[in-house]
Image (tube, rainbow, N blue to C red; front, side, top):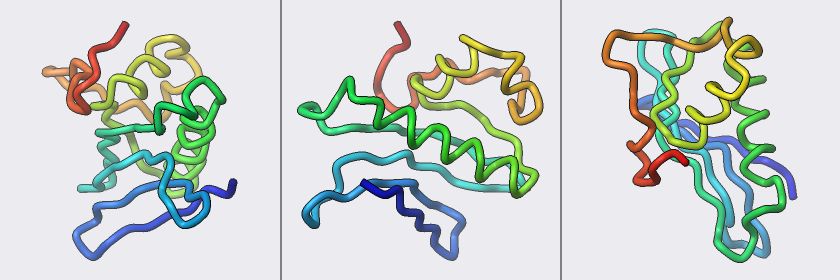
Length: 110
């Protein structure tokens, strides 16, 4: 399962995985002013717990570092990963006064 990447002319994009012609996982984002807002991560329920979201996350981190971007972790999954190991992501974590709660993707952090 290879990770694919797409971005449109409005700087909205996705890292995603397809299997048998069907998208099974995605990490959606938008980029504005060199800041990537990671606002949704999803994996089909039957595939949860297999590390797929982690692979998408790692690909997003590589992409951000390669392009010199910062990340707003609006998605609960991304925010949890950043909070778990803040020292690993201090170079890319874009902190603002009204820090996202992580519920932008509709899933409350645990």
